[in-house]
Image 1 (tube, one colour):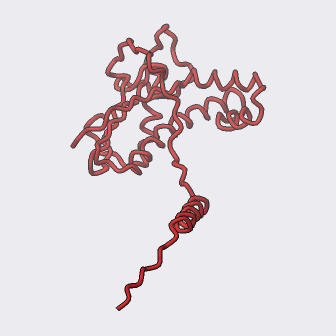
Image 2 (cartoon, rainbow, N blue to C red):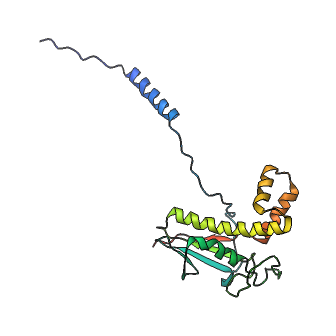
Image 3 (cartoon, helix red, strand yellow):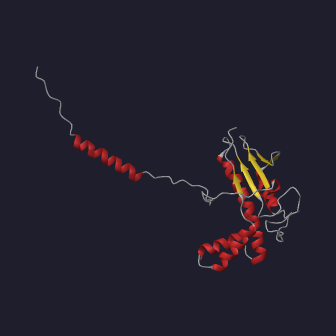
Amino acid sequence: MIERESPKINAGSMADIAFLLLIFFLVTTTMDTEIGIFKMLPDKNLQSSFKVNERNVLEININSKNEIFIEGHQLTPIENVRQLVADFIDNGGGTDAEGNKCTWCQGKQQATASDHPAKAVIKLQSNRSTSYAQYIAVQNEITGAYSQLRNRLSTSLYGISYTDLVAAYKRNKNDKVTHAKIRSIKEKYPEHILEEEPLQQ
């Protein structure tokens, strides 16, 4: 019986085919770009040394069952968070650090809410088991409360909402008057949101 040699496979052409397939899949597949929350973070080296009165801090907790508690005891539906935050910030029950009263505040000046919008701090605490959707929904309500207050003040001062001012400034970055108005509104309702490290359980 005659032994035949098995034909040799040309490895060069196999490598070419594999390379072409690799290029094909790289070109045809899409890369998902991640979407996140745009936040301006404080400077890494910035040390915060000012003391905050407990009255000026509104604690919002989201537990592992996605339930929202405000000040540790009140179970709150998500629909009420925005107004509760706005009422806390806009209370106007005292003065700022320089002793100025909040003449633009329309709150009830309660002893249990913030002294001044400049002193109001929203403290958000979540749990590691909190759903991302619930966390973002609460974040959205907090940001919405600031937008609501800024829109109201801007409309009363300038006859245009804060949202429209920001949109106008984005269209024309050289408009110094609009920029000054935006800065003025932000100074009257500064955003102080403290996000704590999520709890384990």
